[in-house]
Length: 185
Image (cartoon, rainbow, N blue to C red; front, side, top):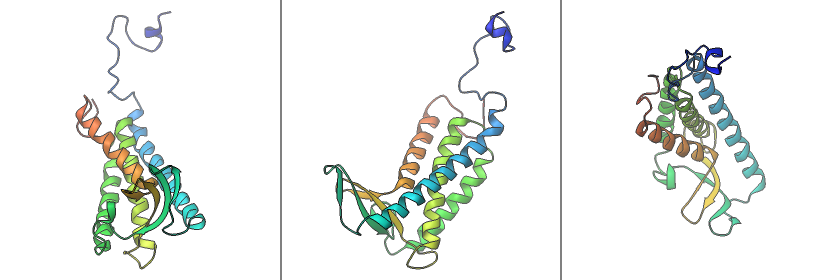
């Protein structure tokens, strides 16, 4: 029996567009995004716990020479410590990002967009948790950073997830994919 006929496709019919979600994939996409967000949150928080228990604040330990190291710092600002005196603004931005991400997650129908949204949602959620519950005070907590890139900046797992998720969104928008994650072809 022809493989196409056994899957329900008519003989001679064109192959399915890979950008089009398989039947049922659209219903699972939100759960993929939420699951990935949970993984990012757990891995980020566990690695921060490890860093706080293992590393000495401010001391850089080389991993790959000067290119990559570990160094425990507490960041009150955004990337590159921008906005150190406006921590509460980053708390509000993170909360808005989490709420917006949750709203969009339930509308996503593509696995690729679900991965991008899951990475962003996980990173934003764990940063929001840091801002809300870490020292020095509620809503003004400092983010734990420990992955040192050259002498440029120090980040964490959530930062990696956010950068990869944002890059994936740019690629998806640039490719022949739906321009909105809630619109599957």
